[in-house]
Length: 626
Picture 1 (cartoon, one colour):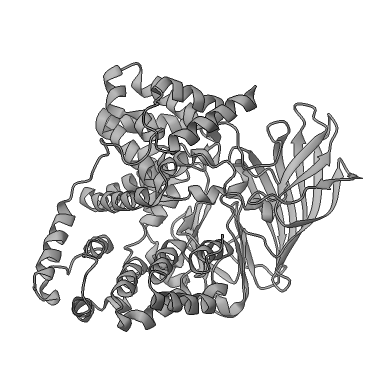
Picture 2 (cartoon, one colour):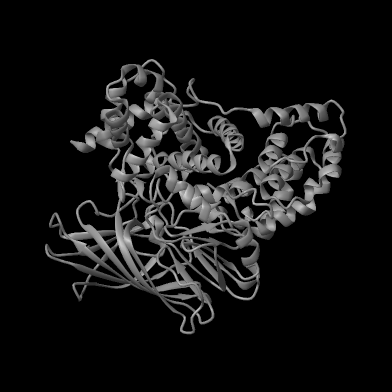
């Protein structure tokens, strides 16, 4: 019966995605559909809904020469429904042996399924309590990036880091790999002597002589928040509970750039309650890291592209810190509910930034986010612009667009504007507290919103148009917009430049990164080579050390065939692995025959520097791989 209901819902949603606007459901009906269907995680092959995964005890060795992790994972389980088989997720793992309660058993490893990997079937008894899996990682482990010394900043030692979100933990640990499945863990990690190992857990702060490190995470987390990094890493404290890790050649710059993270933690606590994870540290990774940051508990992984020398890009850290409440503390139950992680975090990040930098500064972030929102809506199929995603049969990374981030945060901003900031802050603090260390679905959140905040107020419910936001496409008519106080001044300067005022005469001395981005983004597509040269002569944009500004400038340079920037652009592409920058730049190159030839040449040259996840995305753009 449940399968029939889920099938009916899929048909209805597919029909709606075709653009039919004549059949509409009311809010309550759609809410009921959500509550019935959205608790099923279609991206795990495990049966963790039947067998509780209580604790993981991991004992692994890291071999940079073989580019392999090997060892044993011991799961403490509770067979709460008395099933005969425990099913776990794996991806390109070699399983050497499996023991249940100390006795070796026969296991079955299925053929791989696209995106999902292979289910590992282990026979268990009603009272089975311990399952040990001894294994090795494969060459196609999507979570792992192995860096040879020449690919690091210091170029002396190898480096390894993981990226487990969304469903990549299964490529380095046999596990129940779903965001709604939480467990505690401990780990023993053996690495080559002279290197430091770090995890999303209690961490050492200096290299030891043995190369053996022990970790404890005594708060339950899902598998996508499992993280490991190994390299010649140094540490600098910021205050008693925050600090910075980085390669030795980066540590001083990173420490200076991120000197305010302690104040960020204090600000976040003032907004929505205590930070519950002990320490908050940041690891600045080598250049190949494919995303801006990853909110691994206790140890945010960060791209080095935020190290701009002027502390102008550290709002990314505010975002990852905010995940300590929205995402890590209260987690989306499935990847279809991804907006519950990222929309809340985007909103929280901008509240932290406003508290620390002022409203006019945060307004710029809101407006740039709105611009990204518009761009993403225009790029996606209508069904993929709902907040409640539908990713069955697809890679959950298909949902990692700006929709959950920007549509989600703008929906929360609408609620704030409608009920008042104090009321909404009280609601969010209560939400985080009451759902701490739990998971939640979209339907469950909407029920909570209805019960705790709306409370039967029909006028409020009408103003929020929840159905349009959660179960509808595009940008709702009541989407809030930020004050344009600072960007209006930027618009005025752009108009002056386009009408002939010399670039050096523009009032841009005090502009932040955000003002520069707005200035460049809103330039007309037909900007001329002469105008590009004038801007470059005045502001040296080709050689900008700010990755956000540089990427936008290089996209404009490719569009205008401004070859003066191409040398710096190649250097940028050789040293930056962040998909946010790579994808639009390679996409712009691929629009013309000459640009396409350049894209193929550069990608062939630097592909090895990029993380496997970035390679997958860029293969589709440059090599046209499906």
